[in-house]
Image 1 (cartoon, helix red, strand yellow):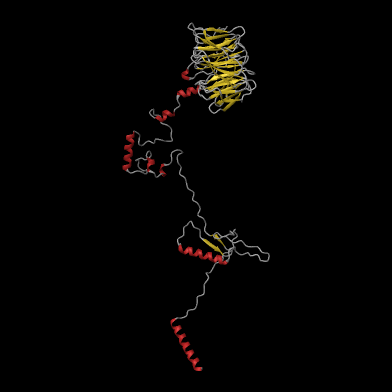
Image 2: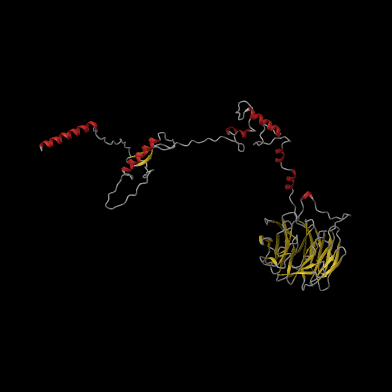
Length: 541
């Protein structure tokens, strides 16, 4: 038994000797910790949160003690330090824009240890207000007019490019050394177009200095005895042949503005009176409405009645022409279309007004008809229909003043009576009201100017005046005290410069309110061959 243990120990010692021979033993290395320098506490405010990690929220517990250490644990701090060192080894050349970071052991936070480089202020070169400084521009194409061959200046083009530019400038007929656009005073040369067109035109200056004159006194006054003082009648009209027709009681007088002749062409019976007048477009025929409901057509050259178209049961207060058609508005609210070419003259009847029709006017192209009545209503009728296209009830009184704009087809102006005193402007294509004017007086008529963007309105109670308005601004230009009583009727001359007004004061006055400025055109002389004025001493009887 003892021998057995001796043999075992010998074998074990032999094995140990072999193991030490082939596998020498080395002592294990202890992990070394780098020496960390403690930085003193800074009085500056240190961020309490890491820039790289988000601190975990501490759970509050009554039994736990308050901890004043860093939000990050030592294990987290050592992990972040190893990552930072590994990144630093991989990229030894760091970009100057990246910030170097260092771990503050006391605070346990990452702090910035390098200052941000201050921004260098760029000094802007002084340049011309309109022309930039060519010396700081590197584009050779912008130096076509500024590159010179003078010594001491930088050349932006080589000789080949300069020769090419010179040939190109010579072929185009321009001076190579001259800048086309320059911020300097224009030259005094007569051949310079810029100097020529920068000067103000003498004609333009003269037109500004010469202001338009609006006469505030009548040019001529004619006596008109027997004028009926009725707001709903229409007794004055002026045709294209410069002849003016006026209805005085039972007679119709035609006054020729060129010669001054006065003729009486129509007369009603004892119990009737003239209630309306209207010239045809060619000025050859005159339509006359009477108080008994009759509509008459008179030939002016032959001074005789062509035909009489009866049928209305009350007076015809307004008439208007559309080519060969005559439309008449009656006191019973009806509107008739009369065809003057056929025996059965009545071809259509328009029924919508509940009271007397006192305003009626065809548009210049004959496509639409506007009507106003004593029922405070404005209707727009299509020429091919007997049903109103639009109906407007914005007025608060009778609508007698109806006028189409001569330079805009779909623009209509309407004026109301004493309880309304408004002028409304309508777009007859969209049926919308564009603008309105509070005139302050009863509106009896409206006339559009053919040359200016203006309109004239005549008024009754309480002012008895005329007003000129601008459109579309709707500003009052001037007020003219016209008559001693309310202005009942108005008409414009064929040249669009003179307006005639008639009132119950038995005066017919002529006002040059739309004086033409084209070609310095002066007023028409209206003088006979013997030198006496055609206006003086005239009395319509």
